[in-house]
Amino acid sequence: MVRNNGTVKAKRALTENKHSHKEKTTSQPVAKKRKTEQPQELNKQDEIKILREELEKAEKESREALQFIAEEKRRLKRENVELEEEIRDYGVELRYIKIKTDRELVWKSQEKEVLVKSLEKGQEADRADNDVFAKEEKISQTYLEAINNLKEQIKNSNMTAARAMALRKACEMCQIEFNENFNDSVPKILPCGHTACLGCIKNLLTDGHVRCPSDRWFTKLSGTPESLPTNFAAL
Image (tube, rainbow, N blue to C red; front, side, top):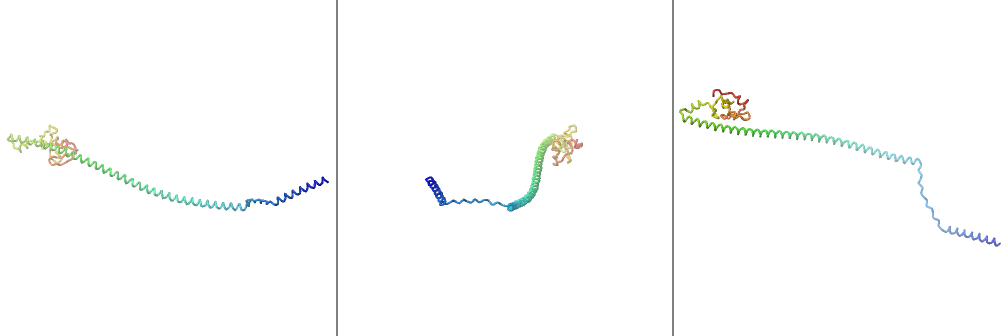
């Protein structure tokens, strides 16, 4: 009996412990578990619909992009044509300006060349005139000396001035008697008709021209002074 009582006590204690544990567990609030939202799975039709919408959107964007590119190409082509026209216009204008400038430069160069030649010709003419005047002055001085000598001869003789002049056949410029044996003393007829010795004609010759001291006629010789006709009547 003692063994049984101990067993009964033990069972009773175990039962009491279970009840107390149950009460404790029931008295404490139990925390609710949070439900996690699971992604809703799409069926095949929904996926196809979404893909079609994305495809349509992409096709629309592609069409818009192609349209924009085409418009840009047309715009760039128009601008390119306008630029080419402007370049052609500028090219024509530049060529015209260049031609005009070149012509003006040529004209100015020609004008300058003509002016320089005119100045040179004028200077040559001035030098020729100065040479002629110097030669004529020298000849005039020689002529005066010859006249004075002739006056002295007439004064010291019974010969009249007219007869002395008639007997003496000499060059009117240098008053040297004509002599066919001496080259420079040969009487030559100038284009104006006056007679002068070859030496005086050579002295008066300037650039192929001769100015006669008697009438101041300026003539061009077609050849050399030696080619002028000889005045045999003056010999």
